[in-house]
Image 1: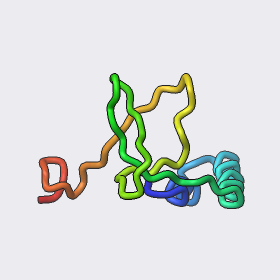
Image 2: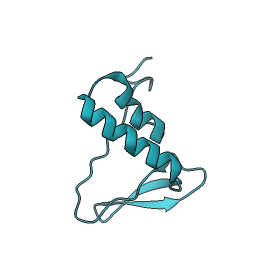
Image 3: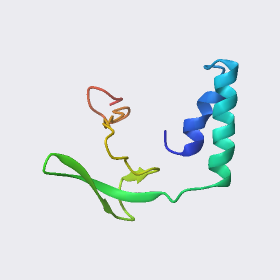
Image 4: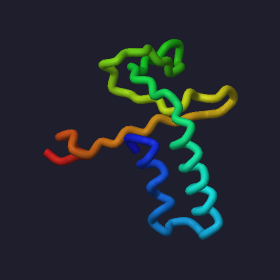
Length: 88
């Protein structure tokens, strides 16, 4: 997803049970009325950890900073890269 709207778009497609979809819609409404700042940055590996460096020309947008004690995984979409995983 490229934005918070993309993240919450899932709730509109009927992919969730009705009560879950309602909770997602409520959260979406809350997020829209309480916008958090988005940070544009570069990600770097320092000592085996991903660290961010604020950079207005960066290629990564952080919607929420990582929380302590939570494991995160970085996934990269290789579509249209001109490589084996994308369109030439």
